[in-house]
Every structure is written in C-alpha cells, then in structure tokens.
Amino acid sequence: LRLYVLVTAFSELEAFIYSEGFARFASKPFSANPECIYDERIHLTNSSIQKEYWDDMDSDHPVRMAKDGGGNKIKLSWLWRRLGDQGVDTEDLWEQIKELCLKTLLVVDGSITPQPNSFEIF
Image 1 (spheres, rainbow, N blue to C red):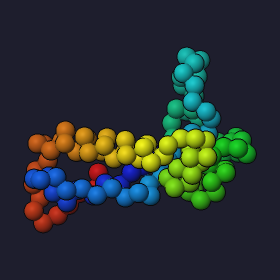
Image 2: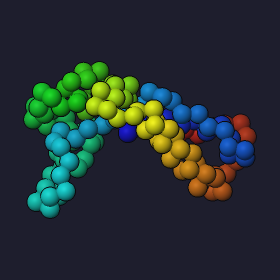
Image 3: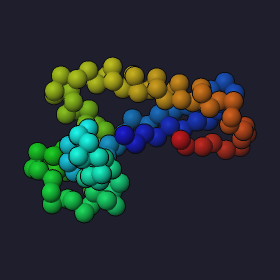
C-alpha cells in the first residue's frame, strides 16, 4: 500500500492521512514455496519490474479488473470496494491502518528535528 501522511507537528502530534492512496500488485500470486523465492513476478511490486510481465497477468488480476490505477497500481477506493464485496470490514481495516500510522509516528517522535516553518510527508 502507498499511503500519504502529512505531519504538521510532532510537539503535540498533528497529522493527516489522505484516504486515496494506492496498492501495488505483483503479476503472480504470492507464494512462500522455496522454489519460488527468486521469482520477481511474485515478490517484487516495482513498476519497472512488473511492466515486463503485464501480458502474463490473468484477466481476473486486480490490476486488469480495476483499469484505473496505471501499471501495476490500483486506487485504494477500488481495493476497498473489492474487499468489501468479499465480506471484509474495510472500515475496521482502515481504522487499523490509521492506528498503525499513528504508532509509527509516535515511535519516531523523539528523532525528528522540529521544523517550525515546514512539514514533511512520510
């Protein structure tokens, strides 16, 4: 997942998360089979690698079905709809993701130098 979090302050944490990120997919389904460990079609989602395997993707691959992300990416809104159709509680999932982002920011709080006239996107 690619998520965008805008942090405007760490001294009294203030951060905003953009709800429309994206997800990258590999061209082949994940496998933990040791014989597949070096198969970049399974384990790497870099666009520069996956574009080489576009023709290998099945018609039911999420990237082919979404048709709106470009390359091997799909919009999160499409992913949430698809997961919701499969019975996943996407509202709870989004809350867990936001909680993870918050915990991540709290962990680095002490190591970020204050920048009074700027902000960073993580």
